[in-house]
Image 1 (tube, one colour):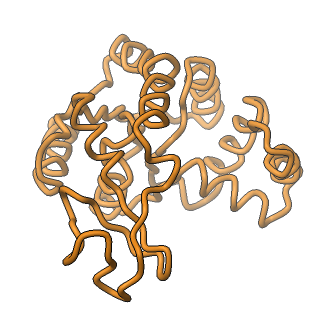
Image 2 (cartoon, rainbow, N blue to C red; image 1 turned 180 degrees about the vertical axis):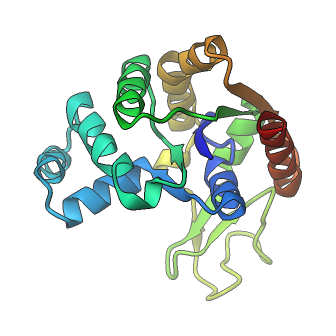
Length: 217
């Protein structure tokens, strides 16, 4: 099984990605994982990526695409993989199509986890983190036993700067502008599977598996 997981920030892609990888026995590949592995292994592209990251600038597409090519060519991807966080743009999607063509494989599906914007904002802005031990809570979905106090160590809970409303609005705007066009791209290819993400975690996973099972029968 070879999958791409799409969806806006706050849609719960990371949780679903792990569930899918476990179910199908395939490797879960996130953009961050790819960069960290390439940098740790000191590949030529990994060193380039590190130089951009250390300078505080975005890693260019050509370097990112090269790292993806290296990663998908590794032996643990031969039985399947799930890409999480790549592609993010149409340019990257076209590059991925070329990589897969070179490897003589194709995608089974692009799974798009759909969640309405108000719920995304509630999910994104509700996170609270303990200053002392780093434990994570959510004021709606996973509240601490006592308001503003960690239930594990008693430390103070705070909202990270990247979780405030203004920042989250910008993240969703960027997704809508740059990544949402991929939905139409994969729909035209006939492999898009839309899944409602505003349900319990287990139900979302069950819906994804049901949609993918139809592709296998």
